[in-house]
Length: 344
Image (tube, rainbow, N blue to C red; front, side, top):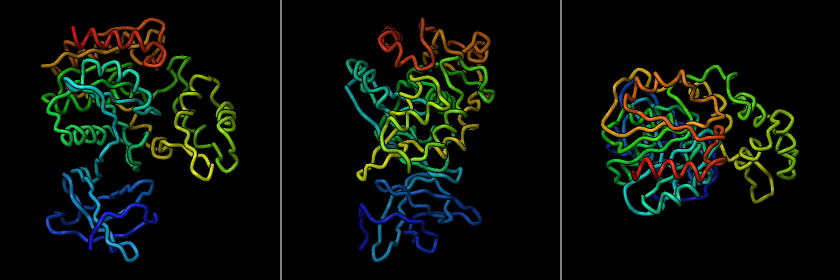
C-alpha cells in the first residue's frame, strides 16, 4: 500500500531507499540532489533524476511506503510548492516579499489591494511557511513563481516585488514576458549588490545580519528578549531587530529557533545580491514601475540607465522620507502609489 502519511520521523535517506515509479524519467550520468519536505521534516534524497515537472517518488521508511510529489528542474534542483495567502477577486496580483520577509509583512497591503484585485502573497523558498532547501537562486525562485501560477491556473499576473522579491519579478519578466500584465519593482535595481558598504544608514549590512542571526545560541535562549539582546550586540537598529524577530519561532517545548533558513540564505548571499536580467534589453509589452525610498541607497540616479536598458518605458517614483522597507514605513503612500499605477 502506498499512501501519504504525515508525522513520520525525520531522517536522511539514500537512493537505495527510493523506488521510482513508472514514468519518472531520468537520464544517464545526471544527478539531482532533492530535498523533500513533509510538514516540519526534511528528507534529502539522491535519486539520480533530472527531469522537469511534477513527479512522484515512493519512499520506504521503516515499514511504510510513502508517495510524495516532487518538482525537478532542468538545472538538477526541484522547484517547490510555495505557501501563499489569497485575497479578493479581480485581475491577479502576486506580491513577492524580500529577504528576511514573508507574506505576513505584506498582508495589510494585500488586503487593501484586494478591494480591486485577486491577490496572492506567497512565502518565497526558505522563508515563512514555505519549504526550506539548500538552494536559493533567482533561477529557482523564478521557477517557484511559475509553478505557483501554473498550479493556480494564472495565465498572466501583475507582479509586485520588493528587494529580493523585486529581483525575482525582474528575472521572471525577462524570461516570461507574456505571463506579465504589469511589473512593479520596489527599492531594488537589476544590478549586482556584491559591494554592500554603500547601503543607507537605515540598512544593516547583510553579512552582519546573517552572522548575528547565526551566532544566536538558542540553547541559552529563554525569551524573545534574550534573542533581541544577542542581536543588539551586532545590530544597533531597533527597527531592523524588530523586523528580524518576526522570524523567531517558539516550538511546543518552549525552545526557540529561526523560521527562515538562515544557513542557506547566508551561504547563498552572493547569489541573492547578484545581478539579474542585465543581459536583457528592450523588454516591453507591459507597464513597468520602479519605486524607491528617498532615504534608501538601493536605487541610485546612476542606476536609472541600466533599468531603462532592460525596460525602456519604465517609470520611477520616489517615496519621500522612506528607507528600504518602505512598505512598513510609508505603507499608506505606497498603496496609493500602487493603486494609481495599476488602476490609472
